Amino acid sequence: MKHLIIGAGPAGVVAAETLRKLDKNASITILGDEPEPPYSRMAIPYLLIDNIDEQGTYLRKDQDYFKTQSIDVVVGRAESLDPVNKTVKVAGGDALPYDKVLVATGSRPIKPPVPGIDHEKVTSCWTLEDARKITSGIQQGAPVVLIGAGFIGCIILEALVSAGADLTVVEMGNRMVPRMLDEKCGSLLETWCQNKGVNVMTSTTVTAIEPSGDRVLVKTSDGAEVEAELVISAAGVKPNADFLEGSGVKLIDGGIEIDEFMQSSVDGVYAAGDVAYGRDFSTGEFGIQAIQPTAVDHARLAANNMHKHGSIRHRGSVLMNVLDTMGLISASYGQWEGVEGGDSAELLDENNFRYIQLQFDQDRLVGANTLGLTQHVGVLRGLIQGKFHLGHWKQKLMDNPLLLMEAYLAATQAS
Amino acid sequence: MQRSLTIDPEKCTGCLQCEMACSFENEGNFNPSKSRIKVFTFHEEGRFVPYTCTQCDEAWCMQACPVDAIKMNFTTGAMEVNEQTCVGCKVCTIACPFGTVNYNVDTGKVVKCDLCGGDPACATACPTQAITYVDASATGLDKMRVWASKTDNAQATT
Image: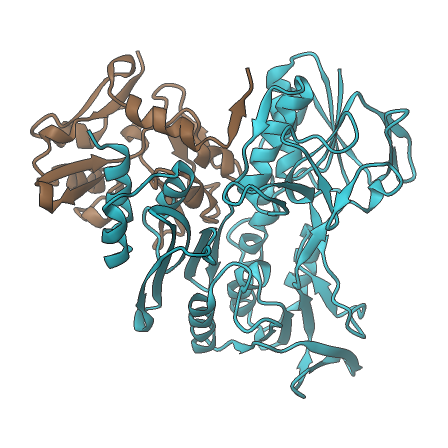
């Protein structure tokens, strides 16, 4: 059996490892389009802040690891997929044959439609190469503009500030991280960043980037003009599925439509991770989650079904995120925006930047946002995914949302 | 013979010696807030429940780690965090459905129970044998294990 995996991120690597465990003799190849060994983009913020070196971002640390697992790692970019002849054409190279193929090509940064976005002083923050550019582009006191206060923008703030950047953040939404945090949470985070000397402009867009001597001039929708040594564009990501055009693999919202066995509309073609339009645990609906735990879930399931189709069904992954923005930790779970007819509970300590809100569907927990909470956060997942009927513990949580562990123990260890 | 922590809440008196012992063993000081085992109090029922990682088979923390910093110790069966490799991204802390991997703000790393390398200080310190370290096949972790399977997002079809 010839397994081809396109994409060398966490989904690709976990799928390859899972396939190896299931079949000692299969041929397993990972095709990745970056020159470095498989690495984690999640680790880039810690590289930028100098806590780790580039090796520290690698998904597997032993340099002979893939060789010892008999997993071939090939550098090259997939150009097209031919499901009839079962081959994947590599740009400037051969067509790789497969029996089963996994598309785990992840996502790539969106380029906002702004005049001047292609200027050499503008970079994304997505690859190790981007990270090198950012590190070398920031001198002490250098004015830097960050477009987008989403997950990526926020998680690199501390690195940028500690590198000496005089930072301006321009965010289109009315608060920071609007796709992960509710209004109170996002606004508190904004105050936190302002207090630390970061200029945050919400409900604002960048309208143009113009050359200005050695620097660029960033113009915004509210008429401001900010000089910048470096502009970092972190305006969101989209699935990397363009190469599938003409292959017959069905896309939705740019992602790959998959069934509960992680297979696309084309037999033998599977998808996992950011590129997969997969099932959400809470809603049962399909969509793109683009988060690390989901990528790993997908990969494990896809590999099992590539090995033996129909062996494991995907019941959906729980949406979850954790973010450290200049030391303030936020998290979100499931249906944090609430559900129709559901109750919600919240506790706010504005002065200490602490906040928690819980969302219920009748007496079950279905979502949450937290700020400044670092202990037992994961139990939120346990409560949501276990779908426990909380009974009288719901009222206790409504009165004090911090009794999460107690509610969980009561639900699981009731005699 | 692999052993595991067994917790019998019925025997717990809430004395918190386990928390003190854990903190001293792992952090070098008596600071229950740094303990990897926690005793939860149910005042209305007069009940105490010591609680820590069960070293579950699913090991969501290990699966979710993007930099391979959590590995199984094959002698003790514990999932251990390699502090040198951990970047402090906290993905494991949200992925563990038991809430037993926590972020340590002071070190910038995550911490979890590692069974003290095979001689758990909490079990040694417990005066009532509410916490014991015994033959893994004889423990009462089953309830949590059963529940753990509920959290799995995959469903075998056969």
